[in-house]
Amino acid sequence: MLGQPVTPVTPLLGVLREVERVAERLRGIPADRPPNGIVSAGPGADAAELVDQHVVKNPSTGGWRLSFQLKPKRSGPIELRGFLTENNDVLTETWSSVLLQ
Image 1: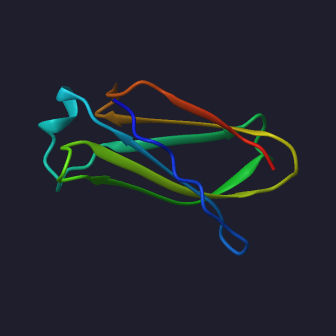
Image 2: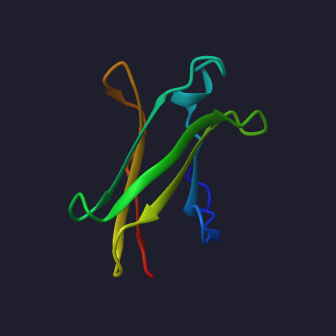
């Protein structure tokens, strides 16, 4: 199950996205050992700069929330992708969205 992305725009810090993943496979991961969040923005390396990223457990759902903040480097649509991994194993489907500016 995938939560709804949150997209507040702050002029100095760029764009914040939050995606929540809830799956039986994720519930057993302890809060003190978060999975790795993998985030990409494109196409091209000049699309956006990743400013901040966190993966935190949601105690209410047992799922994990991938939050990241990016600063667009150019105008136009930017494709965003994110997923969670642990020890080189992909734990979630890839979340994909397009940021229109």
